[in-house]
Every structure is written in C-alpha cells, then in structure tokens.
Length: 242
Image 1 (cartoon, rainbow, N blue to C red):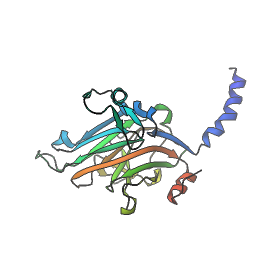
Image 2 (image 1 turned 90 degrees about the horizontal axis):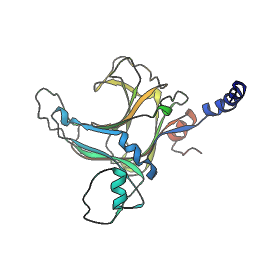
Image 3 (image 1 turned 45 degrees about the vertical axis):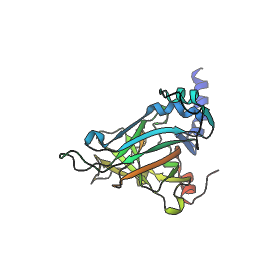
Image 4 (image 1 turned 90 degrees about the vertical axis):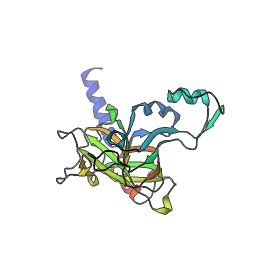
C-alpha cells in the first residue's frame, strides 16, 4: 500500500476506532474461549501457611462429550462415568474454599485466593475508554477486581469491588467500574498517595477474594469489557446499552 493510500486509510478508519463504545478484554461466553483459560493462573495462601483452595475453570451450557471436554481442558481424567457432561452456563467459574487457618507464626494473616491473566497486547491500551463493565453472578460474598498497569512501582495494583445485595445473589448482573474510582493498593494495603490509573498500558486483570470469612465461594463471569462513559452510565442506571 502506497504512503498516500495508507494516509487515506488511517484518516478514514482511525476516527472510527476511537469512537468504539466497548471492547472485550475477556469473553467467556463461547466454547471458543476454552484456550484462554490456559492464560489464567490461580494462587492461594497455601504458600504462606494457609489452607485455602481455588480453581478458575470454564462452564458450558451445551452438552459436551466427555472426550471433547477432556481435550478442551487438556487434562487427563478417568474414563469411567457418564459419556456426556451437562454444563449450566457459558462462563468462567472462580471457586474454592477460603480458610483463615494459619500454620506459620511469621505470617500475620491468611485467607485469600486469586486468579489472574495477562492481557493480550492488542487490548493493553484502553485509554479510549473510561472503565470496566463485568457481567457476573456471585454468591453474595465480596470479590475484588484487580488491575496491574505498567508502572515504575512493581507493587501497584488497582482494585474495584464486586458485591451484590441479597436480591441479586445467584443472579446475573452487570457492574460498572470507572477507572477513576479504583483504589491504588500495594502488598495488600491501600497506598497513602492515590495516583490515577494510567490505562494506556495494562498488564493484567484478575479476581480475588479475601473477605475474612471461611467457607466455600463461587463467582461466575461471562465477560469483562473496557467501556466508554456513555455505556458506564447505562450500567449505573441498570440498563443494557444498545
């Protein structure tokens, strides 16, 4: 493509790209999303003397053959049992058991579990957007959404929270998290000096739970998107944008 044609293409397409209302960062709502689960890493307090457990796995609505299910997860499972597995919803499921048991005297507290994935390079720059929207279903416990940006300070972690009332427990809802409202934390503590998130280069996004309550937890996520101000306002008002 010649330089003049390239300039015409940029002139025509560039403004359209900047006017996008939203872009998917992670979409777990189709079976084609199976491969992205390989990029999600789970860790708990076990490395610090705790006993919490957690997994981050796909969940499908359709009937899937046992052979296909094994292949998609790339796990070796027993061939005994049913030939067909029924999944309830096209989503990612972050679940496990939180324990506050602490077996190490040099650790102040335990009771946390987390999952995280690095963002693909083509969605690391979300400077054209103003926040995140997340379609999820939870058990009513408090979950954290964690964003790690490219930063001089290696412990920078920006956090938002997912918490629903009793009337929305175990129901699908959509939450909006404006970037400007996220808390800057580091090593598990809120930083005294709050710097605005530079969302021109995000490294990773994750979820975690550390609500100091023992017991099972379960959070399902259909998608995570970067969205513009108009769409954030729709979600604040409880409406789905067109």
